[in-house]
Length: 52
Image (cartoon, rainbow, N blue to C red; front, side, top):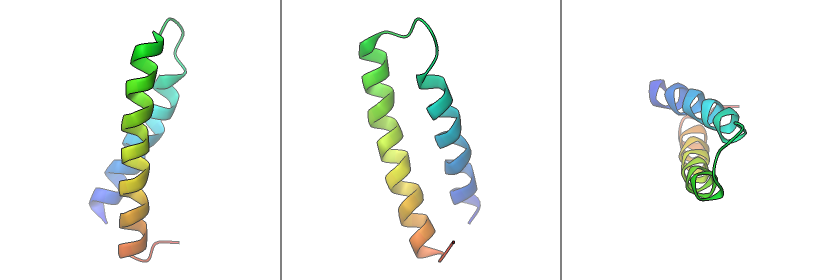
């Protein structure tokens, strides 16, 4: 459960960070791929721990 909370924090921070002014398209694409990985991990943990 602790891992889930950590990933949720990182997910929300990354969602905000991607929207920063001056970010290059290349950086944004890399960050979006990382965000997708984190979203998948949080969904897996949510399912595993039966989090609503």
